[in-house]
Length: 208
Image 1: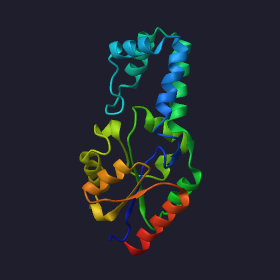
Image 2: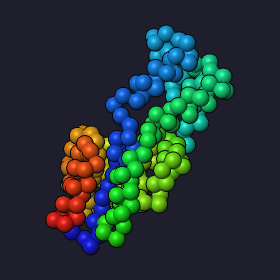
Image 3: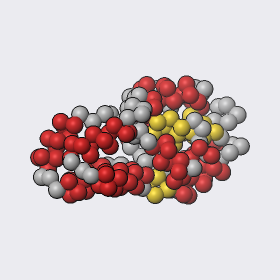
Image 4: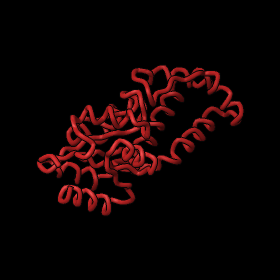
């Protein structure tokens, strides 16, 4: 192991307290309520709007919100409200115990982020949680152009770290993402709670 190994963190469900498996569905239901449309009509309009893939592209957030508002015939106030609601739901609340633990690793390990994301996440998460002061680099899928669990998401991140797979421990709350890391030789920890995750990181730092 190198003198300072890497601890690589996912964001949603790890550094942020949010249910990745439900928040999007719940948010779309709130959008439907704002629009006043039946589900079938909402789905048809979303399909017709041909919204950009903000999870894999940069600079498309504005087009996404403009296209969504136009397709659902929302006014400016409604558009602003659903956008704010989206980012509140997306970011959840900070897992401050784990964030501060990551900060405390300085001098013992280097810390970074690999997260599936949406265009705008860097700015929103920085404003809320100040990740840049703790994690470097921060690798987002919308900037990489590829998402976990695709191998290239991890390979691009290794290149950004300047690290070999064996130098990295990856923390994520989804088994598929852990399996994707393992496929390129990165060890993973399935995050269930802070206590077990911190203990796993400490074992990695001591035993390698």
